[in-house]
Length: 191
Image (cartoon, rainbow, N blue to C red; front, side):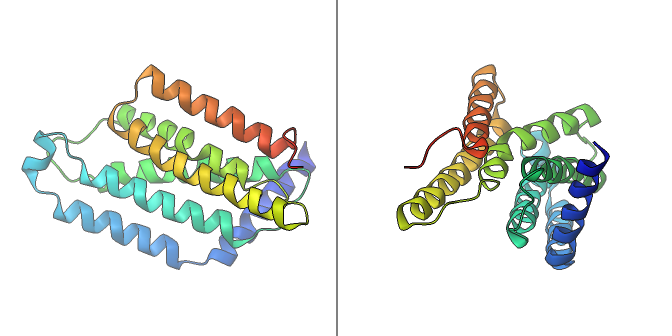
């Protein structure tokens, strides 16, 4: 167990170092700009620019971190991507909570739910990026198509979870997570 945690920590640090400071600074600037531009009447009508900006900034930083260092250890690749996703989901909701300057801020419970929704929406993409794609043009094409589908599904789930997190949306997120977990484990054959 200790070696697995050490591998997760080392790979996460390698990804953070290879990504650099630029994605983080851009995400912070994006959320800050949204918090200063949000007029007071938007919040009364249910439009939260700060939370939406935090979701977009968090998704951009997540993509950068997942794609910077593609060499994953075979042993803990899924755990590394899920730990990075969990950290980004907590950071994006915490950043939105701190940047919210309106007189009607969302409660910390809403931000905690937002963090869980962010995790559910982007977990299939994180899992599909864990699998090593075999040699051959068809395997490469299939792997890229699965990642593209997971990216599109994550964006659709993010909109659905952000606007109205019903039981049907949470169930579809869980099914997408299970499908991506089957793909990442290699139980779905590509040939």
